[in-house]
Image 1 (cartoon, rainbow over the protein chains, first blue to last red):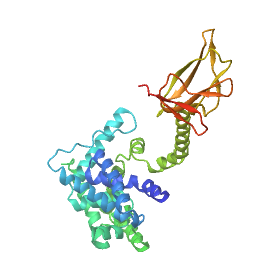
Image 2: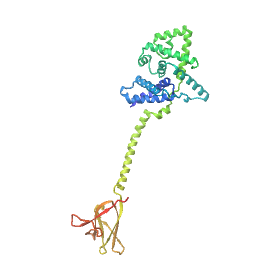
Image 3: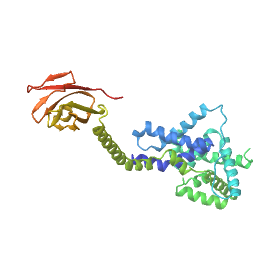
Image 4: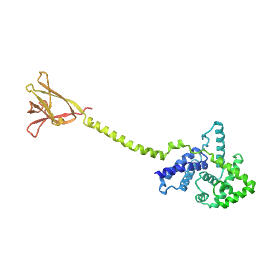
Length: 158
Length: 187
């Protein structure tokens, strides 16, 4: 039980960061993060503490849910409260929302790469294994994803 | 080799690549600018809201919950034990399946100097009855559980008789007679 506790504590913020970039939705990401750990502990606890499996579950959890909710309008992550004075809060909120919207405009592979990097859990090599592409290909794709994100942000997020 | 800036951001460089990177930064102003811009973009990306600790801890908190349970378990057992003890105490004194009623025993025996009562409900211990003035009557109030009981009066210490007012009686193993008393449960 102790090792599961530690596994949860060590990974919850990273999985959340990953899901937030992947979905662009704060509250959904919270739900998905908890759902992912629940699924992981319920079905795969015999596999030990396997990060790759956890992220695969997290991704599938998000995708399953998006498939189900495809026709529903997803709420934006604009209810998030940040610390600081109101004016700064508002500016940060807008900046957050801008970059979050920009990520959502990326193609799925680029978004996945940005999300996986945000989790700060995997090396290029591990990301390659996760996505079934070579490490060299990850290098190129990661950089292109960053450049595309930069381009979207440079266009004012349009 | 443009992706060197991403490798730099992601700490994915070996020594050779680090050397190439520094040289390119030095020689290529566009690459230098791009790397700076991508770094700023990463800073923005990192500023995304993080997990709200209290909200999540409330909804799912294995470590704290686990620790809490460790403390609560013995407390729970103690509480359960205490409750059981209290319930047993009530069960012993109240005997809910056999509610007791006060039963009044009356006997007209003006000639006796002492009248006692012994029955299954007293564990066949003799209990003295009280004379009611000069009326010749003796009386005793006793709590008797509902159900069927046997009893008899003992006059002057050795003369054992059944209750003359009760028709139901049976012979005991010692040649005497016991009255059969049926006490109905009160609702």
